[in-house]
Structures are given as structure tokens and as C-alpha cells.
Image (tube, rainbow, N blue to C red):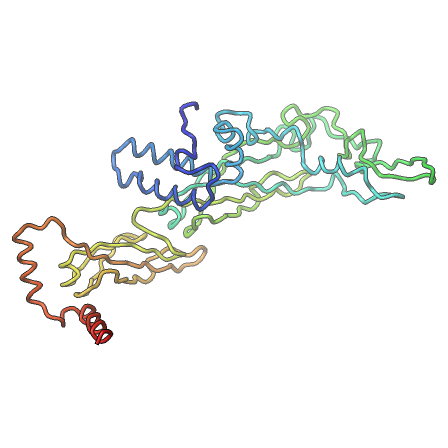
Length: 381
């Protein structure tokens, strides 16, 4: 791992770079090293992978925070021991921590009511990040996502007790998780509700904890899950996958999985909502005389007849040739912006022929040029 370059160095940005700066740097480098533009170039392919890896970490808020604190060890699962591999397992549920802190501050004369510790509790939502190609975003794809979450322990079935044994109701609090304590004060006897010291607020006692989950009922780790990415998903969009978060407690439902999607830029297509834009160069002759050209779209190649006299910057619209809309049958449109390419490195003979051709033209052949000089003439007359 020591030979890995710093992710900020890979993208050429500072450590305090904003999300927009990261995205701009990523798009530039991804386009520069894209394998489609460098077929067979192993060095470009490796650089492309390096750029993707750097952006995948730095574009994710949680991963970036771990990377800033621990470097590659904070985000690379091969290092082990990280937060994602079970570093929070010893703390149990966060609700238990807050209960232990605030449970003893119930009001006087009976205190606040505490939720049943044995009631079903929903699992936590979790986050993940994926990077997909432009065409995969247009067409949809099944991807494998690595998710850090707490899952029900299969060894004990989520009970937390070793196989063959069962948790018992705490005799001190009778399963409530709290006990009522009366204290003598100069103002008289005051009753206060506090967390049960024997079961630590859980309401039950596990005499033989499961060796796999240490009595927690869940095991935390990194798990792989296949996810269907819908056609039409956009860069930065968050997909919600119900029930794929952490497992619930006491038979409660699982939380949800929220996946942030990053779409790699494409060297040919530019996306605008569900519409697609493409720049296509035309020769001077094609623009002047008209021609039938081939236009690449997300659904394949189509032919388009460019009319004669087409000007540089003209935009043609191909209806329904854009990106499929999520959960809808219709598509966006494809816009073709043509640019007239001026020829270079002409021979002496070619230059003379071009001059002869130019001299054969009149103002009626140049509508915009003629209009411009008419306006200019009227302005200074």
C-alpha cells in the first residue's frame, strides 16, 4: 500500500477542494485517460483506474473524512481494523449509549417514561457510493455494492444468546430496563427513575452470550449486495433501497440503503437532464453543399441529412433519441451542434483555387456578412 499516491495528488487538487473542484478535476482527467481514446495503452488504463479510485473516495463525505484522518488505511478494506470492518461493534446500539447517559435524569416523583427496551427497533440507515459509466447510467445496470452494516447474527438468530439458551427477564427491573430509587433529602423522600445496573437498561440478562456477536444479536461488517441501477439515473443522484440497511433489533425492520451515484463523463456525449448533446465537426464543403452524416446516440448510430448552407453552431434536434426517463417509457431528445472545421496546411494551388472561388461570390452568397456591413454603413453615415 505504500506505493499508492495521495488521492488529492492524483486529482491535482488541494486538500480543501470543494465538491465542484473535485468533480471538475475528475471529469478532465477521466476524459484525458479514457480507454476508448487510448485503445491498448496500459499506462492510460492504469491512470484511468487510479483517477476513478481517488474520486470514489474523495467524493464520498464519510470516506473522505476517514481518508483525511487515517490515509489509505482508513478506506482500504485490506488494511482491516477500520470502522467499516466492525470498529463500532463494542459500543452496541447508539440508543443504549444515550439511555445510559440520560436515563438517570427522569423527573422527580416518578421520572420520565422510558420506551420498552424489548420493543422492536428499526435498524439504522446506511450509505454507499458507486461509480458507473455514462452508458450504464443511460441503460441501467446491475452492480455489486459493498455495504458496511449490522446484520442479524446467524449463529444465535439475533437473540444474542448462545445456541440452546435464551435471554432471561432481568429480576431487578422486571424487563423495564429502569428501576425506581427513593432517596432521603432535606426536602423529604424523592423518587427517581434510573437505568437498571444489573441489565444496563436492556431489560433482560444473557447468561451465555453468543460467541459470534458477543451478545449483541447483530454482527457488523462489510457485505456485498447486488443492486439494480435504473436506466436514466443521473450523476449525484441518491438511490434508496428499502430494507437493505442494518438489521433491526428485537425483530424490528431493517433500515434502508442510500446509494450515491457518480457517473463517469463520456468523451462524446454531454448530458442535460434527460437530453443529450453532441458536437460534430463538418467540412466546409459539407456545410456548403449539404451532406448525409452519421450521428452517434445513446441508442446507436442514426443518419441525418444536413441541409446546404448550414452555418457553424447550428443545432439540430433528434426527438426521442435522448436518455430514458426513470420509471417512464419516454426519452429525452438528442441535440447535435455542428462546427465548421476550417482546413489547414493548404498547398499553393489550393490557396489560389480558394481565392478564385471567393472572387466568384457576391454579397448575396453571404447573408450575415452583407447584413453586418449594411448595419455598419448606416451607423457611420
